[in-house]
Length: 227
Image (cartoon, rainbow, N blue to C red):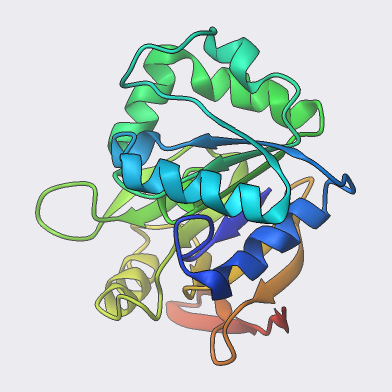
């Protein structure tokens, strides 16, 4: 599973390095990649960018829409994919729709079969126990997610600096579990729930693991390899 702080298929050429990294993990010359743009309400711009990037990199692209009619049931559309990639947007709305359509169960089965699950922003938060989200009115708030990765997640840690004091404060007060603060352009790669690699498409970007220890915050820097 791969959690990206920001960037990926819907961003510029630099962040395509992250996409290349994800595709390389399939060890296939033409991997099958399905995009879940649920969090953005299936925004056409994001879908079009996804197809353009896949065409450039030689991947076989498809997407699953929950807002428009689609030719196949969700289970069949996601079966046989090498990568399922989740885009950004409103995490809360996405999780509600996934539960209604049974997408969460389908994704869990895909993960068990060896499909790589990846995503940016909302597509990073969703895999963890909790995340810091702007999906609710009133600013950044905690959100319970799927719980397939332990702890919490805060994307856009450097890109939206107002997240930083809120994420730290919520962890210190016990409102969020210890978790990962991920800069834009940085990807955390987990295997069987364990962090195995950190990569970045940006020179100054990184990540950190923040936890409460004896009433104080402890921050461990996660220095990435540069793509």
